Image 1: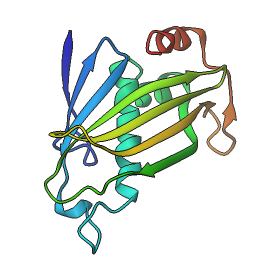
Image 2: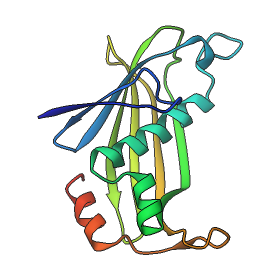
Image 3: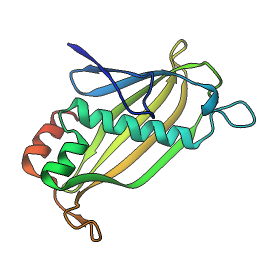
Length: 160
């Protein structure tokens, strides 16, 4: 079964997310003029923006909407580490796919892996990851790492 979601956030404008058995999410987008640097290739922080947005959409596709976790349970999955390795540049109007998977699940942390591929050739352009930690954010001045609650952990286990 495939579900299609439309994002309303500015970052994820013009994106379509496809879900298949919740093992991965795939976001398709077209590289736009504002994504480029002076050399006409994707400005590297854009990849981090796209990965962050795709991470949130991965959670959303699993039924774990970050905003609802924050407001309803004082929980967020904050970034503790991120990285990208670049294989090929993205250029204006290239169509790309961002594939996000949950690669590792620990007591307090999880690891999301992202591959950015050219839509037409399937060539790998970027490989990156985000390590996220479960945080109690009930005190905005003192976030605290906490074990992932059992119900959320069970949902995430189905995504690995």
